[in-house]
Amino acid sequence: MLKVLDVSVVEVIVSIFLMKCEDGRRSRTVSGLDSRRSNLRCCFIISSDFKLSPIRGPGCVLDDCCVLKGDRLLRQGSRRTGAMVLTPQSSKASPSSSRRSPCLEEAYEALKTLEILGVDRKSDLKSATCENVVILASPSSTLKDAFFALSVNGIMRCKSGEDVPKDIVSKLQAGVKDAKLLLDFYYSVRGLVLVKDQFSGNDISFGDAEAIFLSIKALSQSDGRWRYSSNNPESSSFASGLAFETLGGVISLAPSEIDQSLIQTLKTSILKLFDSIQKYDDGTFYFDGSEGPISTTASVIRGFTSFAAAESTRLNLAGDNIVGLAKFFLGVGIPGDAKDFFNQIDALACLED
Image (cartoon, rainbow, N blue to C red; front, side, top):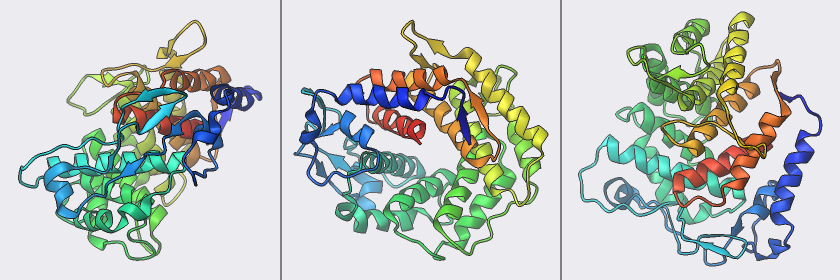
């Protein structure tokens, strides 16, 4: 559970959201847009000419990797933006994992963004999209392919119940066992978390959870930043977010309780990372790095909120940190880059939850 020290923080964040909406333009949202995230809904106005194009079977893998199209996709107030959730990428190259993973990754980010905003257009996409999910969630897929196939499945519900491919579970479990790189740990562990959330009746335990925890923790630095591998001395805040998410997954999948001393070291690492947070005079906070401030800050937010959700004890963060991070994402407008837009919406959703 994430504990904010200042009791008025939630009210402050809500007031920030409402300030974005107080000009009365709520009525311009798409007909039928309905979401429990009413604050996000009124901050981001969806234009009436919103369009979708499905992931078209193998064509997505081979050719245009296209999910969503539309000029004037989003508006903020009266300001027009040409940002597309996904832009077509024409190519006649032969299939490869380098083509598959970006396609699924972009598909997930687009679908997740729409889900958060309360736009339900899954019926437009389900048949062709699910065809690709089944193809790419196969034993021959990479860990990244399997992870994003499961991520898309979590939204589209292509497969559910006990109908999970056994080979995928084995692949992810082997990925955890053999992992040396942070990203391999991330895709394997978070993939197993998705299996646990989406399917029933599957044994997804991975043996000694504390040994896995320590293997990931070995990539941490004293300043709260993390490395991608033991052979690479370079560390980043973005990698920290991935590590926190991964370790939150290890905790949730552990067959027994993780040693509390290990949990405490991770809490200390999270708090230490906040010592490097960037600040503006108006109280806006963000994390920076080579991936850019939006991606980096979103990664950290996903990380500490995932850890807080997995751990029964509380993670104590100062209220001004939470409000400052919310102000950062609410103050950047609508980014022109699809990934930045996803990170903005997803990070705000994490803070709202």
